[in-house]
Image 1 (cartoon, rainbow, N blue to C red):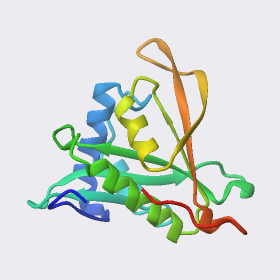
Image 2: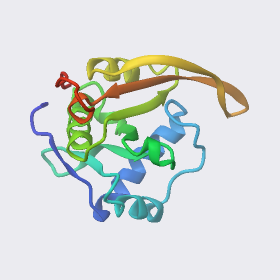
Image 3: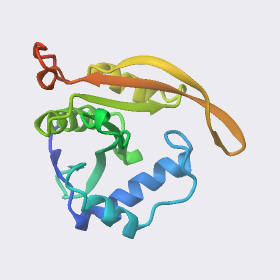
Length: 177
């Protein structure tokens, strides 16, 4: 773990920091199709959902410098063991190994909650996110072509997945991030 970084479950009091970091990603147009900044109230509601936890990375000064969270994949019961994940780092915290520490903690949290698979979609040119996922045991399983429009352009996304073998019947334990 990078020195002086602590990972913990986010609380409602973290909503302003989580919103600010998420809104950096929206403004940069590098990691989400969203174009409208998230409000603190929206993030407060999100952080109250205890089934799909959000973790935060906190620096030595007590500042939230990143967050990662689980969310519903699909509402059908057959997909109950799958969660989507998101991870965002404050631009000043990038490139220091915090993302890897945060994503590893999220994988452990997902495993403890009984999830058997994590999935996400990444813009093809977001090489930092793709490297992070690869380093944490995710595999790229395909591309959704022209998956969504952002600023008037159709963009593809790379689909990533990571199985959590301990939660798959009869599977051997897998490597962690």
